[in-house]
Image (cartoon, rainbow, N blue to C red; front, side, top):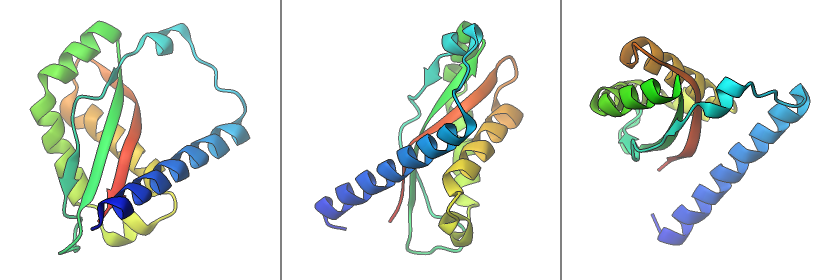
Length: 140
């Protein structure tokens, strides 16, 4: 894929995700942050994850995430320690996505929820992923 087209696609997807997030929070009213939410750090050192979606022979899904973990110190230490397990769980989840699921207009929100549930159920034991942010996502 041409580099300029790839960049344009990334910008388009990022713009869509930001617009979608603004529309969702705008309809729900202002977001209230409790003091504990402010102190929960984001873990974003997982890198880009690239998988073949289920049934998509010549396509690749690229995803980058940031995961907000609580409690702050224990959560960040645990997620750093379990980076390999986290990446494995992410690859398993993302590679199970079908083309139909990836074409859903709400795919980003559904994927965020699935990632959070997977991290909490399969990886973290002493802490919790309270939010997942998709920082990059595209299909090529």
